[in-house]
View 1: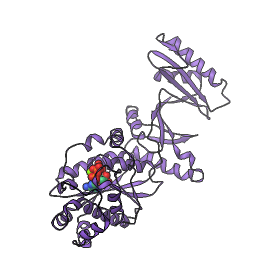
View 2 (view 1 turned 45 degrees about the horizontal axis):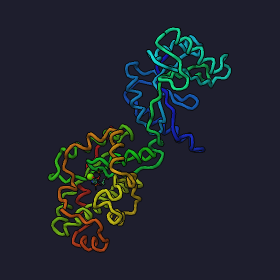
View 3 (view 1 turned 135 degrees about the vertical axis):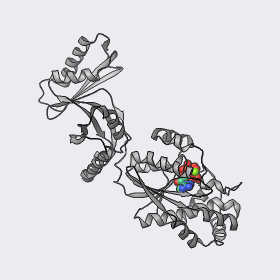
View 4 (view 1 turned 60 degrees about the vertical axis):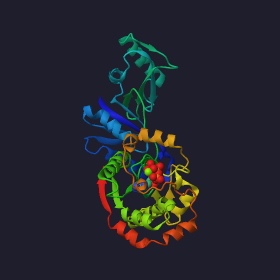
Length: 384
Ligand code: ATP
Ligand code: MG
């Protein structure tokens, strides 16, 4: 008998001819999530098993794989022989101490001398005999003990299902560049695109010395949390201080944010293209702030040709917060910090900037020179 983590995968089975490829990427991502923990990973009909890890690291193994996209559910349990004695020995380790229960058996190995009902009845009877504090309730049990007799005469025994994040293996849907601020939204946007299989690289704009090291550290912390789901991430930081100063000096105050955002998009696109990334990702949500009106989004889109993915576009703030809490970034996102956008924030930002007016204001700036100056400040770190 051996402790194992059982992994069932999500959408991968839908992918017909590409299935082999999706499974290879999935296996690679599972391996990557387990880096530094001794283990073996193998596939058995329709699921994956992690085995041969140090017993005391079982919870850690389960926690790590619970963050890998493509995992539908996982269970911490035992792999054992398939005699009733061996199965029961494992059942004792996952059985509840008291309350109502049922045994649910799945029998892949059809030559087994008992059918699934009979196996459940046998195991259930032994549990009742051993522990008078238990009672059977097949309809609404407080606990379920699962027995899975596999094709090869091996049985899996477990006491619960943990929900995985679902989605597609990261790396099966191309690569994009996430514009990550220190706020709540952008890490969630990155999570959602990675969940659909996109590899996300990260780009953060800072306004040093108006923003301090703390702001950068916060983004690094958020990026690390994100990397538990996405694998290794590359974070690039770029300064936009001189751009904000120029805009502040030469352009209409209510267009400050709009103009800055156009620079961010241009710089992001240059970096994305240089690295062969095929889209930009932002945490924008329609109407959330002045710059996220249709006019605001249009004015940013107008300066780039790469597609801009905005997975949060139809979400309420409440819904985004809920997701941020679930993925574990919320507590870090709400730490106080100076955002580069808030530094020169006008009192009344334009909510419906007209493209013509924006372009006229931008005419006062040497756009190319400002972009080049920003790109020269780029620094990249690898995080995992
Ligand atoms: P967030 O919570 O992600 O900061 P927000 O609601 O504060 O979003 P904005 O500050 O207008 O909204 O930013 C909208 C989007 O623009 C962000 O989700 C992010 O993708 C990008 N962005 C904003 N500021 C930065 C920055 N300093 N560096 C990189 N990307 C940024
Ligand atoms: Mg923000």
